[in-house]
Length: 152
Image 1 (tube, rainbow, N blue to C red):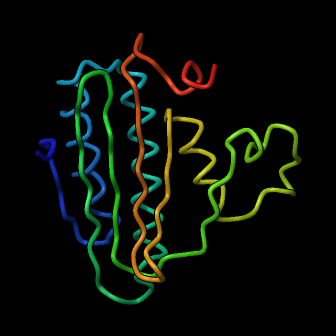
Image 2 (spheres, one colour):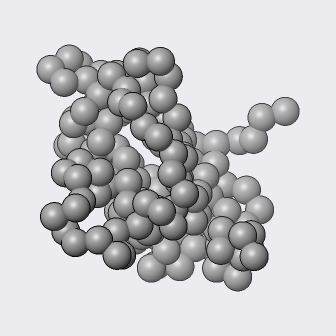
């Protein structure tokens, strides 16, 4: 049995991001998220979509698929493209932090993932042998189990 979700397939163009943000607002409001959490999610989702729009298709026409899955205590958001993927290596969030580094040590293009990790409770990136990338963002409702509590 599959979990019900709300899905969008948009052209991989920046002018369609407002549709994703508005849909996220509606879904997250119905799920009971605070205004602050919704704003954090909007930034993270926009960053994931921007990555797909800017890097997946280069000069080709493509689409970005966004799915919102609300379940008891959390919202799971998937942003997926079928374009060029990149060589992503999942790192420990504590090792990936920029807190103890100078800005000159940050790589251009990698800051978006740090931003998503800072705003969401969990971020996963899945690549598909050179074609397609999926970014999965997870946010728990306030008062629910979060990633930091899971690690204790």
